[in-house]
Image 1: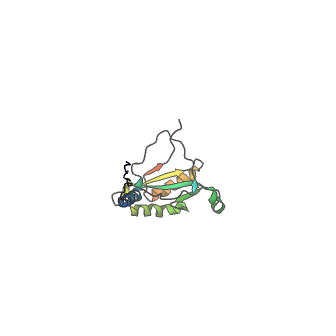
Image 2: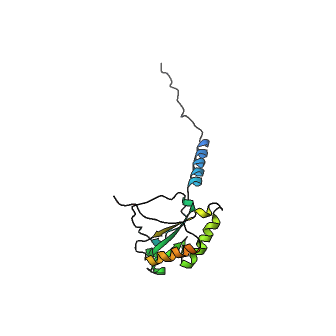
Image 3: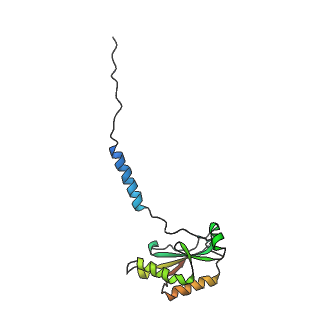
Length: 153
């Protein structure tokens, strides 16, 4: 006498909750991810520093990048030292408008905490640095910092 074996069916599961989980993860990463504010258009080799402190609040920092244009832009802008504010090359005279626009984006209490961060190439001439600092003094942007690489071990 042969016994008939009952066929076991494959377990079924509901995949409707799977899409909910995927959308929750997608939403989480969309909310928590920050996009890069600007594209660096100049080559910068930062100097090394022995004393380095991290910025307290990066949202209160705006960057002035100074260096030679990157290779794809050298045919258009040359190889002279350029200053980048946001996503375009500007002159010293544009710093005042740049700082004023950044201050307008901040709350009244945070405006005094605005920090200007210099990202300057090692080969940048000190005259350019002095000109930028003088213009920042004229527009009362007195809190500045210089970005540097940590010392190599």
